[in-house]
Length: 268
Image (cartoon, rainbow, N blue to C red; front, side, top):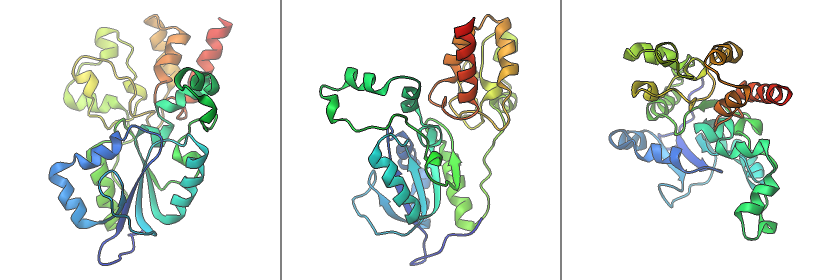
């Protein structure tokens, strides 16, 4: 990884928002003890959630939150890609389309009719898609919201020109490290941990709940193998479709698998 070019001794950081809840930007602001160190290491050139000052591009590091859901956003992301030397998608919306992507399996015009008093004023794309569906992304950080430690690791690694150390294995590894009993084996609970990328610290299994896939698919998920186990627990194709078609459902291979299980359910 190439180190960012320095201007006035510091690389310039830009943080952008698209269709999202602002939660991933708030994760940056909620760093508290580490935030002053981050601000000391970079020049915050554009971050409307945090400050009014806007410095003109180019920028060394760009962090993007949110999915591409409108024609204006589709145009804007291309401009941002040109402005940023190193572009990072942060959070589930930016990396998979987020909860907005649930409309990709439905009629977006019908949704608009139900939500807005004057849907004729709404300009939206037929689908909500991740940043990488529109421009080249140098790195992606999963999670809803993004993991603060991973954000710090990404910024630190970029500043010194090394590859970030971000896990791509499953949540099951985190469960083992925390000494959690397997929810699938010990209690017969349909848990998505074997399919889900680590990063949350196995929060849900640690309090006795099944993993629901908030970090999206791990590096090489075997969805069909897990579903065969789920079938022994009485999980139907329709239920499996709903489980993996959440706010990370438009990320491959969850999308392929949920489409396949939906077809199985219709022919059953």
